[in-house]
Length: 175
Image 1: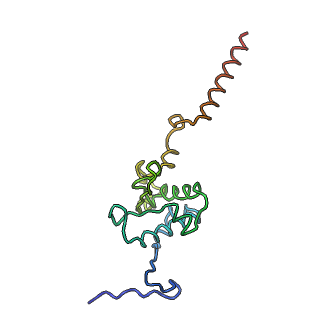
Image 2 (image 1 turned 90 degrees about the vertical axis):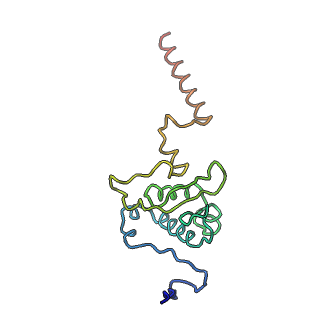
Image 3 (image 1 turned 60 degrees about the vertical axis):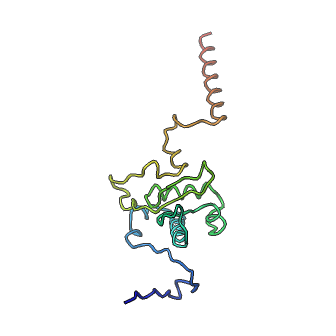
């Protein structure tokens, strides 16, 4: 006996045959990870899930992977006009264990590849851990101790100027 195809209800869809849904389960809605998200972060997650289900061809031909680039979050879905806010919200989804980065396109100027993660189920417990290689470049940068980060030219100049002034103060106090 063939499985009966789900019939969309009028309040769920405009009826377009190519329409997809991005449903989430009750257990996720009540999870510590979901409750720790802001409303824009929740909308981003649902939009990413919608995008995932719309894909006919997945990155690297792997069903669990998806793209979500600037053309989508800014132009198609009109979620953000500011890349920093998108990165902040995306990083929150990573930090809560809802998504993971498979390949970060930041340096290669290629699309970043994501996958959905089940780590959210352990969020807030001792067993919860996000691996460094699952983070975005911006999140990795935030996790590096400040003394290990590369300094830009103006930071170096400020430090050198402060050190020079400190040395001059010491020298004048001896004189």
